[in-house]
Length: 399
Image (cartoon, rainbow, N blue to C red; front, side):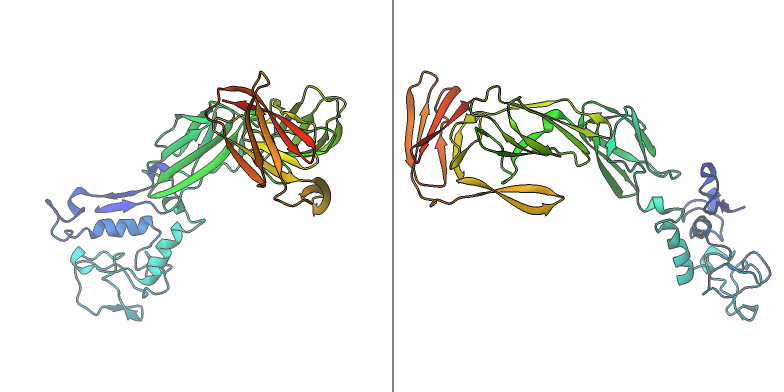
């Protein structure tokens, strides 16, 4: 016997090709009629779903349309032409039994039959691509397994980053991971020159990843306007949150809608803590707490950011008043700010230290003013913005 192979669909433990040592390759002590490696070509053809050219029967069918019907196998190296079953025999085909020197072709039909195995749904498609089987975007349990379809003799190289650590299975088609913390994770697998990457969220939503932004502008939320509606939205890197829960001090008015809230602190507001938590398929997150300085005047309001800061403090005139505008977004109401005053109207900026000493004063006309505060000692400061005879007071932290 020169060799044998298993057709697609057999036992994975025996899936492969076998060739005797003296009929393999082109160098070494080889049989005189098997010196061109055609035995391996023939057996790989079987492994890729090709039948013998004569269909293993008298004028049999090899299930390929462009190979001529042939009465039986051919040996040695016949002279051309050889005829049987009403057509010329293709004894030079790799799927006949002739000597290596006489074999030189596969037909287009044989090529297509072999390639079909590697298309989506084909038995050997895993050799052309790797697909992580787990489809969920959220992983709750730990440990957890990820896998791709197995293929005999294939090494799978896995990379795991973020909230997961790889604990076992490197090199195989299935790995086990453990969760180090709640947050995003990336799982990648490479095999046969192909790579598959999957991003997931591990565990419940992370409270530390929540950020509050201005619902009108999307810019970071930095201060609460007393006696006026504050339009707030929560941002979180996980896209699979299904519920939100808000908590704010008693005496405040307002309402919440999903990850958004409209809150109005009273004129005598105290304890400005806003708390939010989120729910996904793994459960509720911890509460995330947010504290913001108050502004006692909210006519034309000024955004002060970043706060805390270690270098530049930005002061941006946002608008005169909030006007309600319905945009028809899932029955939610979106608020926009309308600036009814000229953009170059003057305002005065004063910064005081914790002893009440004036350390900076500047008159401005720009809609956005950037102050360099890097030279000041770390600590808590009070910023006064005088505009139209009213003062907006904001507590600023310099780090």
